[in-house]
Image 1: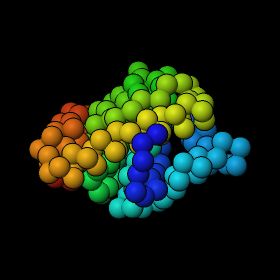
Image 2: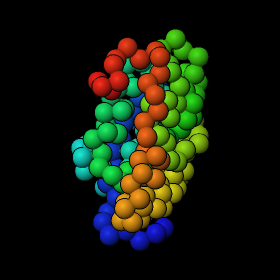
Image 3: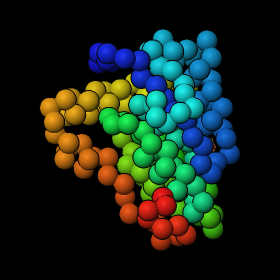
Image 4: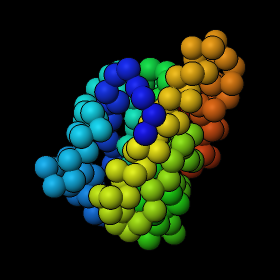
Length: 168
Ligand code: SF4
């Protein structure tokens, strides 16, 4: 793990899912798996968060929510998609309301496999996210804003989303 000057703060959001991966995210916060040993703090405020941990798939209703949380996070920021649903829609992929994985709404930096994703894999994904965060922090420090914006650019809104671009 690379050195950071501050503890990384994580915000967690669940899209459409069975909540199995959310239980595993919560397990990471317990003394058994103890994600806090990496200095990681769970926050409910996107403006304080460095890492966006998303479980579940995106649908037409939650795309604007996911994009709004992401947009409120300060740069540099990292997105970790946890579980098969967050990666591709998982078992819900063919449901009428599912658009797909989190990358249909926002750029994803790290994918954590599993259904459900195990706490060890989630912690590994977050720690990988720290390295990405450090690389982005370096870009910011070097003034390479264009490169950073390119990495963090929002994908176009999926056609199934019934909101305007400036509302999402
Ligand atoms: S990946 Fe599996 S366990 Fe996780 S939310 Fe989806 S269906 Fe549930």
